Length: 477
Image (tube, rainbow, N blue to C red; front, side):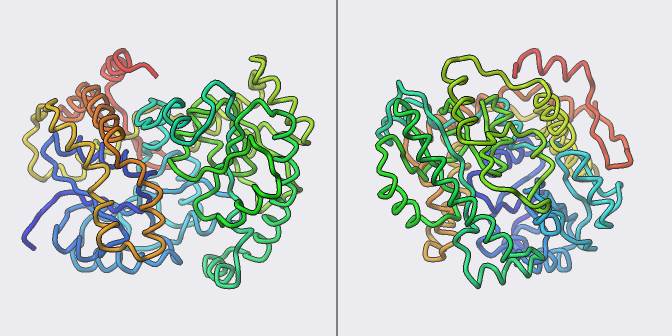
Protein backbone atom coordinates (compact mmCIF):
# COMPACT_ATOMS: atom_id res chain seq x y z
CA UNK A 1 0.00 0.00 0.00
CA UNK A 2 2.43 2.63 -1.24
CA UNK A 3 -0.08 5.41 -1.76
CA UNK A 4 -2.58 7.06 0.54
CA UNK A 5 -5.56 9.25 -0.18
CA UNK A 6 -8.39 10.44 2.03
CA UNK A 7 -11.34 10.12 -0.37
CA UNK A 8 -11.71 7.74 -3.32
CA UNK A 9 -14.59 8.31 -5.76
CA UNK A 10 -15.77 5.47 -7.98
CA UNK A 11 -17.56 6.69 -11.10
CA UNK A 12 -19.63 4.74 -13.62
CA UNK A 13 -21.03 7.28 -16.11
CA UNK A 14 -18.12 9.09 -17.71
CA UNK A 15 -19.82 12.24 -18.96
CA UNK A 16 -22.81 12.46 -16.67
CA UNK A 17 -21.07 12.33 -13.28
CA UNK A 18 -17.46 13.14 -14.02
CA UNK A 19 -17.62 16.93 -14.20
CA UNK A 20 -19.15 17.29 -10.74
CA UNK A 21 -16.93 14.69 -9.08
CA UNK A 22 -13.73 16.21 -10.46
CA UNK A 23 -14.80 19.61 -9.11
CA UNK A 24 -15.53 18.09 -5.70
CA UNK A 25 -12.10 16.41 -5.74
CA UNK A 26 -10.39 19.69 -6.70
CA UNK A 27 -12.17 21.59 -3.91
CA UNK A 28 -11.20 18.90 -1.40
CA UNK A 29 -7.59 19.08 -2.51
CA UNK A 30 -7.64 22.86 -1.93
CA UNK A 31 -8.33 22.24 1.76
CA UNK A 32 -5.63 19.56 2.09
CA UNK A 33 -7.93 16.57 1.72
CA UNK A 34 -6.41 14.20 -0.80
CA UNK A 35 -9.09 12.96 -3.21
CA UNK A 36 -8.89 10.79 -6.29
CA UNK A 37 -11.25 9.33 -8.90
CA UNK A 38 -11.39 5.84 -10.34
CA UNK A 39 -13.74 4.00 -12.66
CA UNK A 40 -15.92 1.06 -11.65
CA UNK A 41 -15.02 -0.46 -15.03
CA UNK A 42 -11.36 -1.10 -14.31
CA UNK A 43 -10.14 -3.11 -11.28
CA UNK A 44 -11.91 -1.18 -8.53
CA UNK A 45 -10.66 -3.50 -5.78
CA UNK A 46 -7.03 -3.04 -6.77
CA UNK A 47 -7.57 0.73 -7.00
CA UNK A 48 -8.79 0.74 -3.42
CA UNK A 49 -5.99 -1.49 -2.14
CA UNK A 50 -3.37 0.71 -3.83
CA UNK A 51 -4.75 3.97 -2.41
CA UNK A 52 -5.94 2.79 1.03
CA UNK A 53 -8.65 5.50 1.30
CA UNK A 54 -10.33 6.61 4.50
CA UNK A 55 -13.60 7.23 2.63
CA UNK A 56 -14.88 5.40 -0.45
CA UNK A 57 -17.82 6.84 -2.40
CA UNK A 58 -19.61 4.42 -4.72
CA UNK A 59 -22.19 5.31 -7.38
CA UNK A 60 -24.63 2.64 -6.23
CA UNK A 61 -24.84 -0.52 -4.13
CA UNK A 62 -27.63 -2.58 -5.64
CA UNK A 63 -28.06 -6.31 -6.19
CA UNK A 64 -28.00 -7.04 -9.91
CA UNK A 65 -25.44 -4.36 -10.81
CA UNK A 66 -22.51 -6.75 -10.32
CA UNK A 67 -19.89 -4.65 -8.53
CA UNK A 68 -21.63 -4.63 -5.17
CA UNK A 69 -19.48 -7.69 -4.30
CA UNK A 70 -16.32 -5.69 -5.01
CA UNK A 71 -17.51 -2.79 -2.85
CA UNK A 72 -18.29 -5.25 -0.06
CA UNK A 73 -14.77 -6.70 -0.28
CA UNK A 74 -13.28 -3.20 -0.16
CA UNK A 75 -15.23 -2.56 3.04
CA UNK A 76 -14.20 -5.92 4.54
CA UNK A 77 -10.52 -5.54 3.65
CA UNK A 78 -9.81 -1.85 4.32
CA UNK A 79 -12.81 -0.83 6.46
CA UNK A 80 -13.14 2.67 5.02
CA UNK A 81 -16.23 4.81 5.55
CA UNK A 82 -18.37 3.58 2.64
CA UNK A 83 -20.85 6.06 1.16
CA UNK A 84 -23.52 5.23 -1.41
CA UNK A 85 -24.05 8.33 -3.56
CA UNK A 86 -27.06 6.77 -5.38
CA UNK A 87 -26.22 8.09 -8.86
CA UNK A 88 -29.83 7.64 -9.99
CA UNK A 89 -32.66 8.62 -7.64
CA UNK A 90 -35.64 9.13 -9.93
CA UNK A 91 -37.74 6.10 -10.78
CA UNK A 92 -41.02 4.81 -12.07
CA UNK A 93 -43.01 2.21 -10.16
CA UNK A 94 -41.52 -0.64 -12.20
CA UNK A 95 -37.92 0.27 -11.32
CA UNK A 96 -38.36 1.36 -7.69
CA UNK A 97 -36.91 -1.78 -6.10
CA UNK A 98 -33.79 -1.50 -8.22
CA UNK A 99 -33.35 2.28 -7.78
CA UNK A 100 -33.70 2.15 -3.99
CA UNK A 101 -31.76 -1.07 -3.47
CA UNK A 102 -31.67 -3.19 -0.35
CA UNK A 103 -30.43 -2.86 3.21
CA UNK A 104 -26.73 -3.67 3.56
CA UNK A 105 -24.48 -3.36 6.57
CA UNK A 106 -21.47 -2.48 4.37
CA UNK A 107 -22.83 1.01 3.69
CA UNK A 108 -22.15 3.59 6.41
CA UNK A 109 -23.85 6.64 4.85
CA UNK A 110 -26.11 7.61 1.95
CA UNK A 111 -26.12 10.80 -0.13
CA UNK A 112 -29.68 11.75 -1.06
CA UNK A 113 -30.54 14.59 -3.43
CA UNK A 114 -33.75 15.39 -1.56
CA UNK A 115 -35.96 14.40 1.34
CA UNK A 116 -38.43 12.31 -0.71
CA UNK A 117 -35.82 9.77 -1.74
CA UNK A 118 -34.40 9.80 1.79
CA UNK A 119 -37.79 9.08 3.37
CA UNK A 120 -38.32 6.17 0.99
CA UNK A 121 -34.95 4.66 2.01
CA UNK A 122 -36.02 4.90 5.64
CA UNK A 123 -39.50 3.48 5.02
CA UNK A 124 -37.99 0.53 3.14
CA UNK A 125 -35.72 -0.23 6.10
CA UNK A 126 -32.57 0.34 4.06
CA UNK A 127 -31.11 2.74 6.63
CA UNK A 128 -32.15 5.18 9.33
CA UNK A 129 -32.11 8.97 9.24
CA UNK A 130 -28.74 9.20 11.03
CA UNK A 131 -27.08 7.54 8.02
CA UNK A 132 -28.48 9.98 5.43
CA UNK A 133 -26.98 13.28 4.30
CA UNK A 134 -29.21 15.52 2.18
CA UNK A 135 -26.96 16.97 -0.53
CA UNK A 136 -28.92 18.07 -3.59
CA UNK A 137 -27.74 16.94 -7.04
CA UNK A 138 -24.36 18.26 -8.27
CA UNK A 139 -25.26 17.43 -11.87
CA UNK A 140 -28.53 19.39 -11.75
CA UNK A 141 -26.82 22.30 -10.00
CA UNK A 142 -24.14 22.59 -12.69
CA UNK A 143 -26.85 22.60 -15.35
CA UNK A 144 -28.68 25.38 -13.52
CA UNK A 145 -25.43 27.35 -13.22
CA UNK A 146 -24.83 26.81 -16.95
CA UNK A 147 -21.36 25.32 -16.59
CA UNK A 148 -19.56 23.00 -19.01
CA UNK A 149 -21.34 23.76 -22.25
CA UNK A 150 -18.64 22.40 -24.54
CA UNK A 151 -20.68 23.02 -27.69
CA UNK A 152 -22.83 25.95 -28.77
CA UNK A 153 -25.60 25.92 -31.36
CA UNK A 154 -23.13 27.36 -33.83
CA UNK A 155 -20.56 24.61 -33.22
CA UNK A 156 -23.17 21.86 -33.30
CA UNK A 157 -24.68 23.17 -36.54
CA UNK A 158 -21.30 23.16 -38.27
CA UNK A 159 -20.33 19.74 -36.98
CA UNK A 160 -23.61 18.02 -37.88
CA UNK A 161 -24.65 20.03 -40.96
CA UNK A 162 -27.63 21.66 -39.25
CA UNK A 163 -29.09 25.05 -40.05
CA UNK A 164 -28.30 27.37 -37.16
CA UNK A 165 -30.94 29.88 -38.27
CA UNK A 166 -33.81 27.41 -38.06
CA UNK A 167 -35.64 26.46 -34.85
CA UNK A 168 -34.44 23.16 -33.40
CA UNK A 169 -36.82 20.59 -31.93
CA UNK A 170 -35.12 17.85 -29.91
CA UNK A 171 -36.73 14.50 -29.12
CA UNK A 172 -35.02 12.68 -26.22
CA UNK A 173 -35.73 9.04 -26.89
CA UNK A 174 -35.85 6.25 -24.34
CA UNK A 175 -37.18 3.24 -26.28
CA UNK A 176 -34.29 0.89 -25.43
CA UNK A 177 -36.49 -1.91 -23.99
CA UNK A 178 -38.33 -2.20 -27.33
CA UNK A 179 -35.29 -4.13 -28.62
CA UNK A 180 -34.76 -6.31 -25.56
CA UNK A 181 -34.45 -10.04 -26.10
CA UNK A 182 -34.48 -13.06 -23.81
CA UNK A 183 -31.18 -12.31 -22.04
CA UNK A 184 -32.16 -8.72 -21.26
CA UNK A 185 -35.58 -9.80 -19.97
CA UNK A 186 -33.89 -12.40 -17.77
CA UNK A 187 -31.53 -9.74 -16.43
CA UNK A 188 -34.50 -7.49 -15.61
CA UNK A 189 -36.12 -10.33 -13.66
CA UNK A 190 -32.96 -10.51 -11.52
CA UNK A 191 -33.54 -6.82 -10.78
CA UNK A 192 -37.17 -7.58 -9.84
CA UNK A 193 -38.53 -5.86 -12.97
CA UNK A 194 -41.28 -7.38 -15.13
CA UNK A 195 -39.34 -7.51 -18.39
CA UNK A 196 -42.13 -8.84 -20.62
CA UNK A 197 -44.52 -6.08 -19.62
CA UNK A 198 -41.80 -3.46 -20.09
CA UNK A 199 -40.90 -4.64 -23.59
CA UNK A 200 -44.51 -4.81 -24.78
CA UNK A 201 -45.33 -1.28 -23.61
CA UNK A 202 -42.20 0.18 -25.19
CA UNK A 203 -42.84 -1.57 -28.52
CA UNK A 204 -46.38 -0.23 -28.59
CA UNK A 205 -45.26 3.29 -27.72
CA UNK A 206 -42.46 3.31 -30.30
CA UNK A 207 -44.82 2.22 -33.07
CA UNK A 208 -47.18 5.09 -32.23
CA UNK A 209 -44.25 7.50 -31.94
CA UNK A 210 -43.26 6.84 -35.55
CA UNK A 211 -46.62 8.28 -36.64
CA UNK A 212 -46.24 11.33 -34.40
CA UNK A 213 -42.70 12.13 -35.51
CA UNK A 214 -43.67 11.78 -39.17
CA UNK A 215 -46.59 14.19 -38.74
CA UNK A 216 -44.35 16.57 -36.83
CA UNK A 217 -41.75 16.65 -39.62
CA UNK A 218 -44.41 17.34 -42.24
CA UNK A 219 -46.16 20.02 -40.14
CA UNK A 220 -42.92 21.93 -39.48
CA UNK A 221 -40.71 21.62 -42.58
CA UNK A 222 -38.89 24.79 -41.53
CA UNK A 223 -37.41 23.26 -38.34
CA UNK A 224 -34.51 20.93 -37.65
CA UNK A 225 -36.09 17.89 -35.99
CA UNK A 226 -33.29 16.19 -34.05
CA UNK A 227 -33.84 12.72 -32.62
CA UNK A 228 -31.42 11.83 -29.86
CA UNK A 229 -31.48 8.04 -29.28
CA UNK A 230 -30.86 6.69 -25.82
CA UNK A 231 -27.33 5.18 -25.58
CA UNK A 232 -28.88 1.73 -25.18
CA UNK A 233 -31.02 1.89 -28.32
CA UNK A 234 -30.45 -0.03 -31.53
CA UNK A 235 -28.83 2.09 -34.25
CA UNK A 236 -30.13 -0.19 -37.01
CA UNK A 237 -33.70 0.66 -36.05
CA UNK A 238 -33.04 4.37 -36.62
CA UNK A 239 -31.27 3.74 -39.94
CA UNK A 240 -34.35 1.85 -41.16
CA UNK A 241 -36.65 4.54 -39.74
CA UNK A 242 -34.90 7.33 -41.67
CA UNK A 243 -35.31 5.48 -44.93
CA UNK A 244 -38.96 4.76 -44.17
CA UNK A 245 -39.91 8.33 -43.17
CA UNK A 246 -37.93 10.01 -45.96
CA UNK A 247 -38.10 13.45 -44.34
CA UNK A 248 -35.17 15.78 -44.99
CA UNK A 249 -35.59 17.72 -41.76
CA UNK A 250 -35.24 14.67 -39.48
CA UNK A 251 -31.71 14.09 -38.14
CA UNK A 252 -30.65 11.15 -35.97
CA UNK A 253 -27.69 12.24 -33.81
CA UNK A 254 -26.11 10.20 -31.04
CA UNK A 255 -22.96 12.18 -30.36
CA UNK A 256 -22.45 14.62 -27.49
CA UNK A 257 -24.06 14.82 -24.04
CA UNK A 258 -27.81 15.31 -24.02
CA UNK A 259 -27.74 18.55 -22.00
CA UNK A 260 -25.76 20.32 -24.72
CA UNK A 261 -28.37 19.44 -27.32
CA UNK A 262 -31.06 20.63 -24.92
CA UNK A 263 -29.28 23.92 -24.43
CA UNK A 264 -29.07 24.50 -28.19
CA UNK A 265 -32.67 23.47 -28.94
CA UNK A 266 -35.83 25.58 -28.88
CA UNK A 267 -38.29 22.81 -27.95
CA UNK A 268 -37.67 19.59 -26.01
CA UNK A 269 -39.90 16.54 -26.61
CA UNK A 270 -39.95 13.30 -24.65
CA UNK A 271 -42.15 10.35 -23.97
CA UNK A 272 -41.28 9.32 -20.39
CA UNK A 273 -37.54 10.08 -20.27
CA UNK A 274 -36.24 11.65 -17.05
CA UNK A 275 -34.24 13.99 -19.30
CA UNK A 276 -37.31 16.20 -19.12
CA UNK A 277 -36.36 17.10 -15.53
CA UNK A 278 -33.02 18.50 -16.70
CA UNK A 279 -34.92 20.39 -19.38
CA UNK A 280 -37.20 21.96 -16.75
CA UNK A 281 -34.16 23.12 -14.78
CA UNK A 282 -32.71 24.64 -17.95
CA UNK A 283 -35.98 26.52 -18.52
CA UNK A 284 -36.73 24.93 -21.90
CA UNK A 285 -40.27 24.49 -23.30
CA UNK A 286 -40.78 20.79 -22.68
CA UNK A 287 -43.63 18.53 -23.81
CA UNK A 288 -44.29 14.81 -23.57
CA UNK A 289 -46.09 12.72 -26.17
CA UNK A 290 -49.02 10.75 -24.79
CA UNK A 291 -48.26 7.73 -27.00
CA UNK A 292 -50.25 5.07 -25.16
CA UNK A 293 -52.06 4.38 -21.92
CA UNK A 294 -49.52 3.64 -19.21
CA UNK A 295 -50.13 1.27 -16.29
CA UNK A 296 -49.52 2.73 -12.83
CA UNK A 297 -46.19 0.92 -12.48
CA UNK A 298 -44.88 2.81 -15.53
CA UNK A 299 -45.49 6.19 -13.93
CA UNK A 300 -43.22 8.22 -11.67
CA UNK A 301 -43.68 11.18 -9.35
CA UNK A 302 -42.21 13.49 -12.00
CA UNK A 303 -45.15 12.69 -14.31
CA UNK A 304 -47.17 15.23 -12.34
CA UNK A 305 -45.01 18.01 -13.81
CA UNK A 306 -45.38 16.93 -17.43
CA UNK A 307 -47.07 19.17 -19.98
CA UNK A 308 -48.63 16.47 -22.13
CA UNK A 309 -49.46 16.60 -25.77
CA UNK A 310 -52.47 14.32 -25.50
CA UNK A 311 -52.81 14.07 -29.26
CA UNK A 312 -50.63 14.91 -32.24
CA UNK A 313 -52.79 17.95 -33.00
CA UNK A 314 -52.48 19.24 -29.43
CA UNK A 315 -48.71 18.79 -29.59
CA UNK A 316 -48.51 20.67 -32.89
CA UNK A 317 -50.46 23.55 -31.35
CA UNK A 318 -48.13 23.71 -28.35
CA UNK A 319 -45.04 23.77 -30.57
CA UNK A 320 -46.61 26.47 -32.74
CA UNK A 321 -47.07 28.62 -29.62
CA UNK A 322 -43.37 28.21 -28.76
CA UNK A 323 -42.21 29.09 -32.25
CA UNK A 324 -44.42 32.19 -32.20
CA UNK A 325 -43.03 33.22 -28.80
CA UNK A 326 -46.43 32.87 -27.15
CA UNK A 327 -45.95 29.78 -24.96
CA UNK A 328 -45.93 30.03 -21.19
CA UNK A 329 -45.79 27.09 -18.81
CA UNK A 330 -49.23 26.83 -17.16
CA UNK A 331 -49.15 28.06 -13.57
CA UNK A 332 -50.44 24.75 -12.21
CA UNK A 333 -47.58 22.86 -13.89
CA UNK A 334 -45.04 25.42 -12.66
CA UNK A 335 -46.20 24.86 -9.08
CA UNK A 336 -45.98 21.07 -9.41
CA UNK A 337 -42.50 21.23 -10.93
CA UNK A 338 -41.27 23.56 -8.20
CA UNK A 339 -42.61 21.18 -5.55
CA UNK A 340 -40.97 18.21 -7.26
CA UNK A 341 -37.57 19.94 -7.50
CA UNK A 342 -37.84 20.95 -3.86
CA UNK A 343 -38.64 17.44 -2.65
CA UNK A 344 -36.32 15.44 -4.93
CA UNK A 345 -33.47 17.90 -5.63
CA UNK A 346 -33.36 20.10 -2.52
CA UNK A 347 -34.83 22.87 -4.65
CA UNK A 348 -31.81 22.70 -6.98
CA UNK A 349 -30.27 25.50 -4.90
CA UNK A 350 -26.77 25.04 -6.47
CA UNK A 351 -25.08 24.37 -3.09
CA UNK A 352 -24.79 20.57 -3.42
CA UNK A 353 -21.07 20.45 -4.21
CA UNK A 354 -20.32 22.56 -1.11
CA UNK A 355 -22.53 20.33 1.04
CA UNK A 356 -20.61 17.25 -0.09
CA UNK A 357 -17.25 18.94 0.58
CA UNK A 358 -18.47 20.00 4.05
CA UNK A 359 -19.73 16.49 4.83
CA UNK A 360 -16.46 14.85 3.78
CA UNK A 361 -14.47 17.45 5.72
CA UNK A 362 -16.60 16.65 8.78
CA UNK A 363 -16.14 12.89 8.43
CA UNK A 364 -12.38 13.44 8.18
CA UNK A 365 -12.29 15.98 11.04
CA UNK A 366 -9.70 13.95 12.93
CA UNK A 367 -7.47 13.71 9.88
CA UNK A 368 -4.77 16.14 8.79
CA UNK A 369 -6.27 19.41 7.59
CA UNK A 370 -4.17 22.55 7.86
CA UNK A 371 -7.28 24.75 7.52
CA UNK A 372 -5.63 26.92 4.88
CA UNK A 373 -7.20 27.52 1.51
CA UNK A 374 -4.61 26.63 -1.09
CA UNK A 375 -4.29 29.32 -3.78
CA UNK A 376 -5.86 28.65 -7.13
CA UNK A 377 -3.13 28.79 -9.75
CA UNK A 378 -4.50 30.35 -12.91
CA UNK A 379 -1.65 29.55 -15.30
CA UNK A 380 -2.55 28.23 -18.74
CA UNK A 381 -0.85 24.92 -18.01
CA UNK A 382 -2.81 24.48 -14.79
CA UNK A 383 -6.04 25.15 -16.64
CA UNK A 384 -5.12 22.56 -19.26
CA UNK A 385 -4.29 20.07 -16.54
CA UNK A 386 -7.66 20.61 -14.89
CA UNK A 387 -9.41 20.10 -18.23
CA UNK A 388 -7.47 16.96 -18.98
CA UNK A 389 -8.19 15.65 -15.50
CA UNK A 390 -11.84 15.56 -16.47
CA UNK A 391 -11.12 13.90 -19.77
CA UNK A 392 -8.28 11.56 -19.00
CA UNK A 393 -8.41 10.42 -15.39
CA UNK A 394 -10.93 7.78 -16.39
CA UNK A 395 -11.04 7.79 -20.15
CA UNK A 396 -7.39 6.97 -20.70
CA UNK A 397 -7.89 3.83 -18.66
CA UNK A 398 -11.06 2.98 -20.55
CA UNK A 399 -9.54 3.45 -23.98
CA UNK A 400 -6.20 1.74 -23.46
CA UNK A 401 -7.13 -1.17 -21.27
CA UNK A 402 -10.75 -1.99 -22.00
CA UNK A 403 -11.37 -0.88 -25.57
CA UNK A 404 -12.70 -4.29 -26.62
CA UNK A 405 -15.31 -4.58 -23.89
CA UNK A 406 -18.62 -3.42 -25.32
CA UNK A 407 -20.03 -1.50 -22.35
CA UNK A 408 -16.81 0.38 -21.72
CA UNK A 409 -16.34 1.00 -25.43
CA UNK A 410 -19.80 2.56 -25.49
CA UNK A 411 -18.89 4.87 -22.60
CA UNK A 412 -15.72 5.85 -24.37
CA UNK A 413 -17.55 6.64 -27.61
CA UNK A 414 -20.06 8.78 -25.72
CA UNK A 415 -17.30 10.98 -24.31
CA UNK A 416 -15.01 10.98 -27.35
CA UNK A 417 -16.18 14.42 -28.54
CA UNK A 418 -14.52 16.03 -25.52
CA UNK A 419 -11.01 15.22 -26.71
CA UNK A 420 -10.47 17.83 -29.41
CA UNK A 421 -8.44 20.95 -28.63
CA UNK A 422 -11.46 23.27 -28.73
CA UNK A 423 -13.30 21.20 -26.14
CA UNK A 424 -10.30 21.09 -23.82
CA UNK A 425 -9.94 24.88 -24.03
CA UNK A 426 -13.61 25.39 -23.18
CA UNK A 427 -13.54 22.87 -20.32
CA UNK A 428 -10.39 24.37 -18.82
CA UNK A 429 -11.93 27.85 -18.85
CA UNK A 430 -15.16 26.52 -17.35
CA UNK A 431 -13.33 24.72 -14.54
CA UNK A 432 -11.35 27.81 -13.59
CA UNK A 433 -14.52 29.93 -13.85
CA UNK A 434 -16.23 27.63 -11.36
CA UNK A 435 -13.30 27.21 -9.00
CA UNK A 436 -12.58 30.96 -8.81
CA UNK A 437 -16.19 31.51 -7.73
CA UNK A 438 -16.00 29.14 -4.77
CA UNK A 439 -13.59 30.84 -2.35
CA UNK A 440 -16.36 32.28 -0.16
CA UNK A 441 -17.98 28.90 0.41
CA UNK A 442 -14.70 27.00 0.81
CA UNK A 443 -13.53 29.46 3.46
CA UNK A 444 -16.92 28.98 5.10
CA UNK A 445 -16.14 25.26 5.30
CA UNK A 446 -12.54 25.79 6.47
CA UNK A 447 -13.73 28.09 9.26
CA UNK A 448 -16.43 25.63 10.30
CA UNK A 449 -19.24 28.10 9.61
CA UNK A 450 -21.74 25.35 9.01
CA UNK A 451 -23.63 22.89 11.16
CA UNK A 452 -25.53 19.65 10.83
CA UNK A 453 -29.22 19.46 11.69
CA UNK A 454 -30.74 16.02 12.23
CA UNK A 455 -34.21 15.80 10.68
CA UNK A 456 -36.62 12.88 10.47
CA UNK A 457 -35.54 12.29 6.86
CA UNK A 458 -31.77 12.75 7.31
CA UNK A 459 -29.00 15.19 8.14
CA UNK A 460 -29.15 18.69 6.65
CA UNK A 461 -26.07 20.88 6.17
CA UNK A 462 -26.78 24.47 7.26
CA UNK A 463 -24.28 27.11 6.09
CA UNK A 464 -23.79 30.60 7.49
CA UNK A 465 -26.57 32.57 5.74
CA UNK A 466 -24.51 35.75 5.37
CA UNK A 467 -21.80 33.85 3.50
CA UNK A 468 -24.38 32.17 1.29
CA UNK A 469 -25.79 35.60 0.40
CA UNK A 470 -22.27 36.82 -0.33
CA UNK A 471 -21.67 33.82 -2.59
CA UNK A 472 -24.88 34.38 -4.53
CA UNK A 473 -24.19 38.09 -4.86
CA UNK A 474 -21.17 37.16 -6.96
CA UNK A 475 -22.70 34.14 -8.71
CA UNK A 476 -26.08 34.81 -10.25
CA UNK A 477 -28.19 31.89 -11.42
